[in-house]
Length: 383
Ligand SMILES: Cc1cc2nc3c(=O)[nH]c(=O)nc-3n(C[C@H](O)[C@H](O)[C@H](O)COP(=O)(O)OP(=O)(O)OC[C@H]3O[C@@H](n4cnc5c(N)ncnc54)[C@H](O)[C@@H]3O)c2cc1C
Image 1 (tube, rainbow, N blue to C red):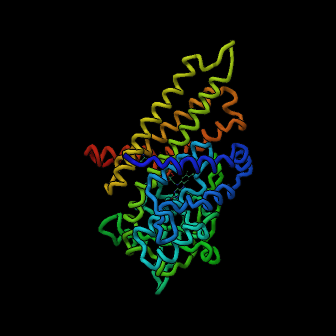
Image 2: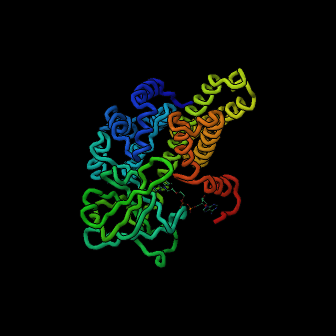
Image 3: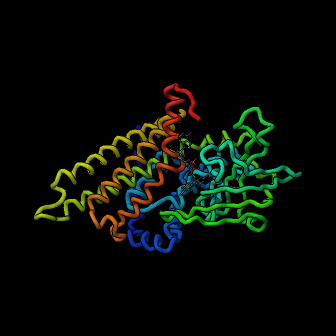
């Protein structure tokens, strides 16, 4: 059993009460960043949940972080603007030197340093991460970085970036997952040389960007761990990320099911509440059942994670099932609301757009299915 963290849930839910639908709608219309919301979460220490106490964080478990993100979403808010501040630091915590941890983690814990840009995906490599081309060439006591990243979310609102770059040309490698390295990049400094950020407008308000590196200098001391081992450092954080995103989807599904059921009770057509029709009840009930099943998988992934196991399969399944459940709930909520499902003032269309992302990012459903087919069911690798 994992801890429920009811006190944390109640406090987060109360905080979210200060950020109602109108707040998110206005940001959406302006494509603006939820600075006040992020500041409120930061001030209460929620974004430092996973940072050990010795570095100024709360030193809590992954289930506490999951509870926070689920509650944010169950309240109709959206944590995507800052969830990475919680977990991107994991790469530094697990693989960084003592000097790197002391230099960066206290600032990340108190919010004075925003470490929420995670630059892995590139336009030409897509899901095939070992095919990335951004290159960091060693030159004395520094590296010179050239290349391009895409979908680097929150890059405009981050002081530091975790950057995955190639440090050995593919032709010189024995193993295609070697030769990649992770850096912690000071974005404020890098912007003074060759780092350029260009926002991408998407169907939801997500602050995601393209990032261009033109001879960007990174001090060699900002290399995390060993050169060439970066791919496995990035992989080591995937379980936590997937479990946390799954928790957000559970929160979305809870909000959407609640909204749909409430509207089904209140809307009267043909002289009775539309919720009296089974055609309206069943999709909502089904979405609820799927959410509860996915929630059990999230809990199982958390239980294994907190027991020190490697819950690769459970974290992947939790993320896939939770993202599907939230999408099913979004579908049911729009359908239940009829025309008003499309009206911005009901917030249903916003959540519908926001929650759709999680079947694609941070990993798409097909890749999760391939993982299960290969690693759990023993079928041949398909790519
Ligand atoms: C809003 C948003 C925010 C994001 N934030 C970040 C971020 O902060 N940092 C970051 O590094 N990345 C980020 N991403 C990138 C995200 O992780 C990728 O979009 C995702 O992993 C899919 O990669 P792709 O877009 O390159 O799709 P592609 O790799 O081009 O794939 C396209 C489709 O083909 C399918 N496909 C590909 N190969 C196979 C195969 N072998 N078998 C079956 N199907 C296959 C995929 O499942 C997918 O459905 C973000 C993306 C979005 C949209």
